[in-house]
Length: 265
Image (cartoon, rainbow, N blue to C red):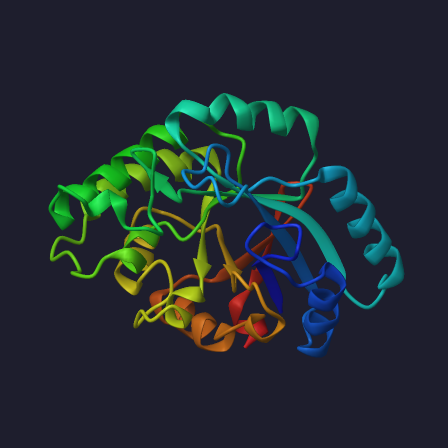
């Protein structure tokens, strides 16, 4: 089993040392994991800075790779929070650092944090959702140095009144940009932990992704605690299989490997 979305104390919103996460992953029987530490340039909250000390990150990752060699495979990843006006900063980062895996997420829209629900102020739920998806599409048209989109419908986690519109037209436009360029999406199981009835994306979005021809999908818990590792993975694999998706993807030096879901269950 593989968990390709997790955080350690190299992320500003996590306090768990990287080695504790590794030990927890081993205890849960995971064979391969990827740390995807947060980098969110110009995050609209001065009280938290989502950046990574890559010198220390690389040293600790390499130390743990050596210590646990033959027991678990540890990949170097990153989760970037894109905004249209700062994509050049991520271009520069990708020129400076090498990663096994890159998640492209959107945590802010209209330069407002989703977490604080500011995007909904002065807008209908539908207007906010449309703005979120349109801005996400703008980013992936202009920035290509990533492997999958993170929790593509994350905005659902922050609305008090769910939208009746599924926004399949907007999502189709995103997938039609994504899929021909060899990019994929993740199934992020944290949605249930945060009170939703489903993971992110929801089942209808996963079905739409398959309908659009999508095949690349990674599985991630978005763990910030050891107890959250591999959360609801078996249920998620069964869902993907029922939808007709055949593979879970892992990445090494950004090259995909496809694993039959049937063999993982």
